Length: 306
Image (tube, rainbow, N blue to C red; front, side):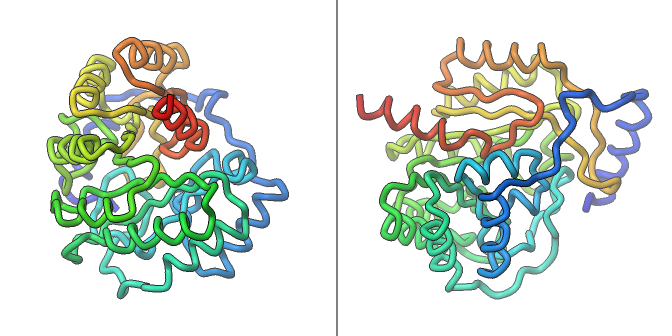
C-alpha cells in the first residue's frame, strides 16, 4: 500500500497523464490453465508454499508453469517494505520457517522443474535479510535435482555484505536483483531502497564470478532516455541480462500507470540494449522478471562454458 507521499505523487501523475484510453490489445491476458499449471498450483497449496507468480499476479503464470519453470517466494508472504508498485502484503512478518527450503526442494523435484527462480519478500528485521534461507534453498535444490538450474531474485539485504557472503556459500546459476525503475523515481517507487546500493550489489556478485540479471518496469513515469541511461549504468556495474516490461497498476491504492509503452518502443529497448552489450534483453509489454528465465539461463551458461 502506498504511503502519504506516494499518494500525493499518485494524484499528480493521474492529473497530468490524461486519458490513457482503452488498454492495448497486446496487454490482454488469457486465463491460466493447462495440465502442469493445475498440478503446480495444487502442490503449492498442499505444501504451504508461496509463488511470486500468484502474489504479484504475473500475466505469464500459465506459460511458465506449463513449461516447467516456476518462481517460489520464500521467507513468508509479508514484506517489510512498502513499494508503490507491488501487490505483496506489507507488515510485520511471522517467524522464519526453517523447513521452507526443504519443502521448496521437494516441490521442485516432484514437478521435475528444469529451471526454478527463488525470490522473497524483504525481511529488513533480520540481520542477514534471510540470506541463510536463500542459501539453504539453493543447496537442497542442487542436491535433490542436479539437472535443474537455479536463479535467485534477491532483495538488497540493506547492503550487508555478510548476507552476500552467505549467498556465495551455495551460489546459484543466475543472480538477479531488480532495479525496478530509473533513479529519479526511487523516492516514489522504491522509497526504502537505494539505486546505487542495488548497482553495487550487482557488481559485488559479478566480481565473484556469477552471471547477473536485473529488470525494470516502464510506464510508471520514466522517459525513454532515462531507460537508456539506466542500461549504461547496469552494464558498467556488470549486468548480463535485462528484462523490461509494462507496469500495470495492481490496485487503485498503488501508483498509476503513466503511459502504455508501444510495441515499437519495447523493440527499440531490446535492440539498443543488445547493441550496448547485454547478453540477453527481454523487452515486451508482458515481460516480467522470470519470463523465459530458463532460456536465458541456458544461453549464458552455454556461453560461459564455450
